[in-house]
Length: 129
Image 1 (tube, one colour):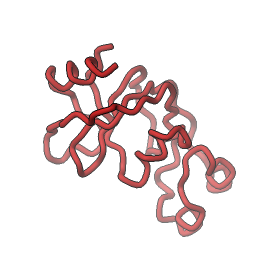
Image 2 (cartoon, one colour):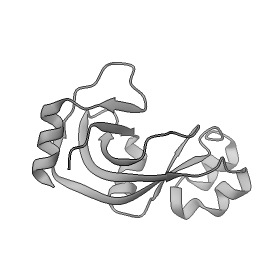
Image 3 (cartoon, rainbow, N blue to C red):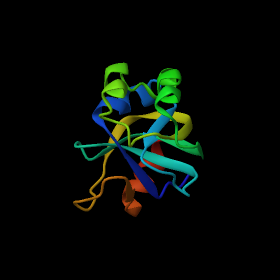
Image 4 (cartoon, rainbow, N blue to C red):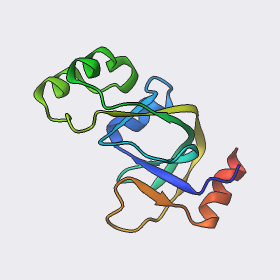
């Protein structure tokens, strides 16, 4: 499997994704990206796992966000406060796999969502799959 893009995931969310309890990564809008992606641990600069970005849902209302909390794991108090109201679009992840050894991933400063992976990073990920 040759993965060329990585999604930056917050420290709060990546553990839930990697343990399989969070299948929706909430974002502020849709993406056209689909397929195999790397999961990059924000602030650590490492690829911790891989997943398939299978689909993107519609922008959810506040009540829908509360009803689907089991899928995105955003705490109720954060939802009710409005603190995360702009992150209301689910990016649906499947086939999540944690890497046995995280792969160092340099990316340009300012990258907040997507990172184009260097060839050596893609090869190091593929070697573990």
